[in-house]
Image (cartoon, rainbow, N blue to C red; front, side, top):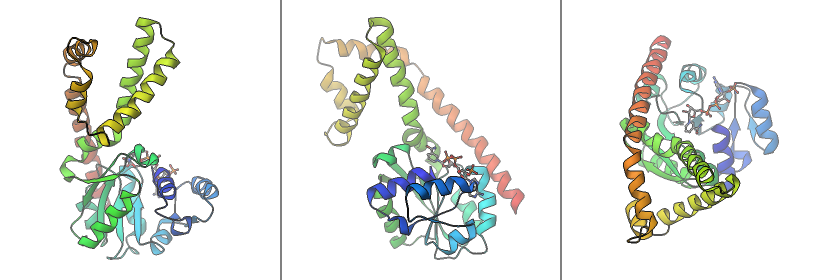
Length: 265
Ligand SMILES: NC(=O)c1ccc[n+]([C@@H]2O[C@H](COP(=O)([O-])OP(=O)(O)OC[C@H]3O[C@@H](n4cnc5c(N)ncnc54)[C@H](OP(=O)(O)O)[C@@H]3O)[C@@H](O)[C@H]2O)c1
């Protein structure tokens, strides 16, 4: 995700390569990224990265946070803006470990094509100027939306996991079309891909809501209305089950992360 964000900021012209310092545990990965974007600086470790940066994005998995915070806690200063991109690591736990201004921004793979939401949560130390800076930065690659940290899991499901969820649904949609009506699978997939692009534009730029688009397409007596009825009946509780599962997993992840923070203090 760190690589996706760097490449999105470069693509959007929000940052130049000379503005960026990177560090990755496996150095070869950082070298590969820097080779693709000449001018990016490779820091030899997390400490040096912090010493050379104003805004720091931590893009590691939840249970690696302890190690990264251990690495940087002696060098990070109150004026640094530290951004976590990880749902189950609480802002207040990071604030307890370092004196920096801490925010959480959960990006989405959709940000790599400069669209989709980025979920923004502010810690207690950010000034209103810091908040504006953060919004300005992420507006280059996304639509930043401020959310309550208590809703981070479900919001991430909707903004960051949903591209995968939607692709599975659309894959089944196209495969079923092929199975039932004999259309070649590749043709079905092409039709679905173009349809998703168009629906995204209609919902974000075309003045439609989820409800009004259904109404617009489902003309009385047409096949769409019957199709909507089939979906309504057959979908059942599938999405409730999905969200119960992600909420349950989030609780477990929070416990693991709390244990990790507790063991490190
Ligand atoms: N994937 C998504 O769509 C998505 C969306 C929103 C948020 N996120 C969040 O982003 C975070 C990263 O996810 P990911 O999918 O990008 O995972 P990933 O591909 O495993 O990337 C994590 C990177 O962190 C590096 N790393 C681990 N420990 C480190 C340390 N102590 N110092 C420096 N670098 C270290 C790893 O290095 P190595 O090369 O040595 O493994 C790896 O390159 C997760 O917390 C996830 O929740 C992901």
